[in-house]
Amino acid sequence: MKKSKRWRVAQYFEAQWWRNYLKNKDVDSYLTWKKKYWAGVLQQIETNVKPAEGMKILDAGCGPAGIFIALQPHEVTAIDPLLAQYAQDLTHFNPAMYPYVEFETIALENFERNGIFDLVFCLNAINHVSDLKTAFLQLYNSTKKGGKLIVSIDAHNYRLFKQLFRLQPADILHPHQYDLKEYGEMLTNLGCTIVQTVLLKREFLFNHYLLVARKD
Image (cartoon, rainbow, N blue to C red; front, side, top):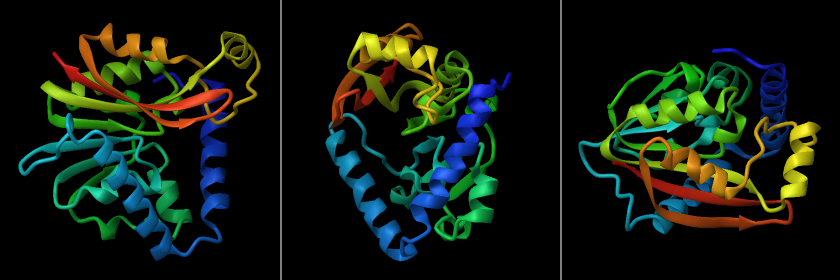
């Protein structure tokens, strides 16, 4: 995978962001809150996404407290290029707490397990990858035919700001700048059908959406 300078800078600041964000947060209280948050996300998409016994689930770009923390007792694989650093730097991330999860420190673009997973989550992560086209392709390839791919995105609301952010890295944590329509087309062009779009958070420059897609 070719790692752009902008991606390497974004990864550095991503790790720094987590250290600053978590440094004054009690571990148990934070993880309890985060698990409740993920349970709420799952509730919003439960008509289309229902983790069930025997399913294999991928949490791509999981970070130190991804949706994997709310998926016990399912068989989960969780990947992130910064996992080793999180384990070293953050008391909030202890892989031993999640015996049902297989963790792997790897970039999404380099992860290859074709057709393995019934559910593929990529939450708060796709904006952070180095090679967006390859990352979406790996998510698609990892999903079983008929399986569900669930992606959250920060989507631009205004074309002008989208173009400005592409020219100047004002949003340093996110190397990629697209709108909702463009992200949707990245999935449908691969052969997915978007079955649900959820507005998670409305803001001025960006809205935060959850896209649920079926691999046809």
